[in-house]
Length: 196
Image (cartoon, rainbow, N blue to C red; front, side, top):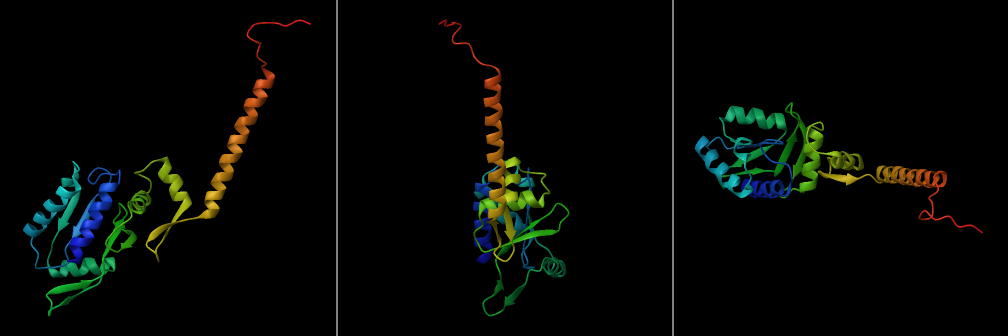
């Protein structure tokens, strides 16, 4: 039940972003239930690709299953813990997604079932080592810092003030250059010379 909620929250966040799965980044969804088959993964993938509604995602969103030893090795490496409850037939686990670098190292964890699209976008830009994103993303990453204890980006006021000060200096400098230029090149009054 939780897995479908996490996937729904992730899909919603992905749909709100301008980055495209399959073009700008890849999504890897891994089942830790060894009873699930590749056919189950294929059916689940079809559901979420239909909800995502973007071309090219087919080759960039991977749904994987595997045998228990492989699942155990992957979840241990990722620091993800879960416990099977035979009474309910369900797994007890936290709800989280992880953002990885292109080299496969975990860059950030996001806990919960809903994910802020702006935080996810910044996480992808930062994890990609600036291979995706634009100048605005770089400015935002300068002004925001990922707080792992909260699982989100927080504004760094000092950096915002520094950027505001720099912008003010540049605007004042440009204004002064314009004024000096105007003083050095006086305009004629519509071609008319007034004599007294």
